Length: 504
Image: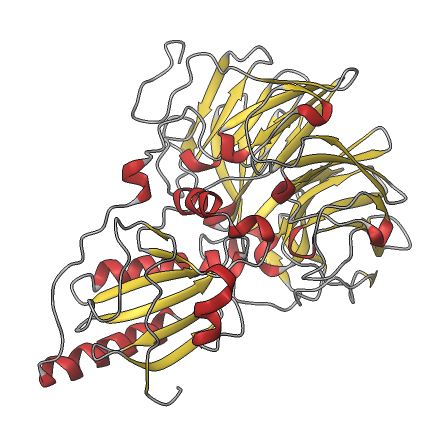
């Protein structure tokens, strides 16, 4: 706890989201207020959103949560990009865009996420940082409500807000698609914002919808299964099995495409709080935001974003365990046991090495899966704040929160997500921009005359590269002979509850 001090007033002339007017502490006198200092790239910030939603719904007559978005990356300073993050993560409280870290500095914040608790008389009476603080917060909220009820200084009245999702409903056929996977016979899309998977032909004909479109953790037939913001996928062609990183369920799912059945194979449905390297039986071991998968032999390798580690699952024994990373959020090369990653969010391989899009250090990493089992940085500065948009060689390269990597023919395709570009990286670390002019937008065409909006999934099949263009809610296809980019039309696909494709 920190001493009771008067809370600095919130700026009225800054951009506010999820409300039709700026909010002031003076106007909200009589309410308990939590200021959530966050930045939308940060997995730890995302992990506390369910806790905040629980609290704001349970105590809606006396509690107001205000997100104070203090951006880490340059791309996160744009109000429109923050609006998209609010829609993607279904944030239902007001968000102040903290330009230039003014509010951050006034409240002496030091880390993301940090929560400042303000009592009904306008005094800061406590702060917490990091994840897993719901019980501490709830106890404090209950104490404040009781104290100020007795003093007569609490105001019980639900706050009325105009939410971004009311202004901009997610009724696009795809919603924030995360990852895409091209196989010999079909295109598989993680329709993350609609909590389902879409399987189509390369011509855009819908073959299957997997999941109801409602968030949940339910096994069973395609039409009854449920996911929660699924991301990366891996395909076993021989057995017609699809493996899915069910990110916000903290689980791995297996989809039998022949039997058309979904089954959970790892995770308990609850986020792991164990930060030390460990493992165990798949269904008894809690996971922490698995973001992407790749299958090598009979093993799944997992980019475990929330634990800042690479994990491995033996599909024969169903044992899941840490493969590399000490769980410190950093960029440390060396042996598997001493290495460190920072929110790994994309994974690919060439049979000798795993390739990782290590998003928070804006770097591409290599992880040995044959002797000598070493971790290296292929390109990027390797620093938590070493980001930018610079082509070149090795540590001189600057990326900005890269979320996807795809190995093909001795090169790595990289989704340089916050630079809105697709780059090509050699295994020796030479990085060159191939697609995108760096401006967020939706523009087909050729090479650098194209535009994307936070692309976060890549897959190569034959002479085509498929791109999950996340904030544009579409899949793009690139002819690798000409670098011509087109936007795929998914024929008859609709948002859940809007319509049902006629052929399903």
